[in-house]
Image 1 (cartoon, one colour):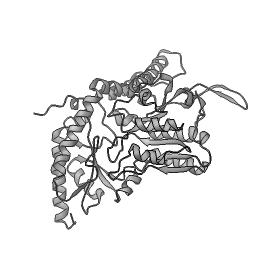
Image 2 (cartoon, one colour; image 1 turned 30 degrees about the horizontal axis):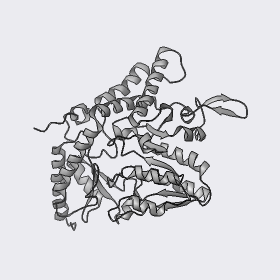
Image 3 (cartoon, rainbow, N blue to C red; image 1 turned 45 degrees about the horizontal axis):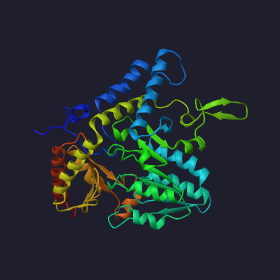
Image 4 (cartoon, one colour; image 1 turned 135 degrees about the vertical axis):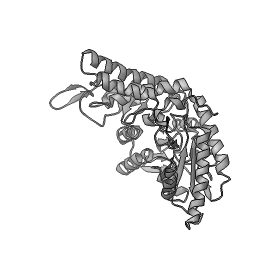
Length: 404
């Protein structure tokens, strides 16, 4: 009998035949996160930073307690934590505020073909508007970012380096610490997309010395609608807010206004209060579970599944040496959307498509792929079902005339 001490905490998996292998898109929620989020709506359901009655005070206390929890989770200072609607919003904030202010004509912005669209499209826009140059790190033969290839594109004109910490398609971990050190030697700022990394790796922003880092709450067991932007305090203080409105200002006059200090000047209007409060419960769950234990479990599952899948004739695996939870693959001659429908009929939930990362999909020379991604609540039985369904899919599509 296989035991998984975490699985029982996820109500969606109780008495359910679902094999959920799409955690890289969004993680399932433990009962504590669901309860914490619902408790806000049931017991409080009021705004923050405004009222002086008991419910308003408690909602504000819980909201700010999450800021403290996030800061502790990534080893930041409390006033370096900004809440956003997601990692996408966080990275757009950096690009359109810091980037538009600090990038000049002919400056260089380094990105990679491994990026999620939210880590590259904002910098495409900045480069176009500011007449700067977007520079891509050459990937090695396996599609990895290497320090050696980063050195090839780093110049005295480099002002921004915007990179993923873990690829959402290939599952590769970027050697980000060495890259940050090299970038800082050229006085360039580094923005890290940690949406895939935060659920798997212990992140210490001070040790990394990263300038900005973005996190997606829903990928690390938290609610949807909340993300985090970490930024060094001096950089945040110098940035202008993008959204102007309630609660982000200190004083408003007829023709000018004075903003609050960071992080509050970036949090205008009514924030996603319930989601922020729920994020604290997610962090507490991950800290109790221990990210090292979680990642060891995930890697064992991924390797167990991979060792069986690589023996299946008629499939192509694109990331055999992935560092984390992802197996990216296709059934030969079968469009991944067709294949995903077969998996869905057998209650195996995979992602099919370009995964909001078309550049690496094009680098691989394909239109799209299937992606299986594992997390702490998955089991070896889930892996077995993935393998069995893959074999059945190959057999089925061959039987109906697809060239597998």
